[in-house]
Image 1 (tube, rainbow, N blue to C red):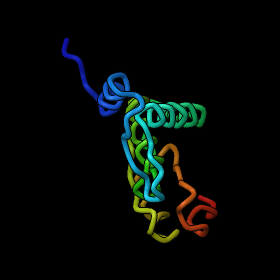
Image 2: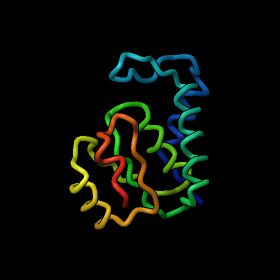
Image 3: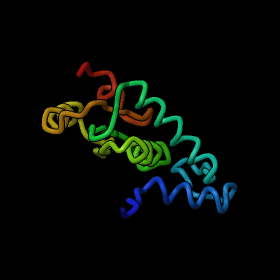
Length: 122
């Protein structure tokens, strides 16, 4: 039986080899280490699991290009779910249209997403 490598396995390998090495620099200049990144991915995994996300589910991630976005992508990999990345600059109406088409089990918004999009009742 062949072993299936998923994206979170690559993060785990890097974190094991160099946990305190800089992994990503967020737009605000904050340096995120591999240890921090794997911790954020574990927290995101727990949150998605608590929300009922499981294998095969789609999770829409509406976020800016930053470590929070990637933490949820890795979390989806850990749950064997599918990440559906969405540009944070879309309007609430555009996001609603994507939700209607993708029918995700969960929608994740980061704090940088505009307030109108985050507060809309889906």
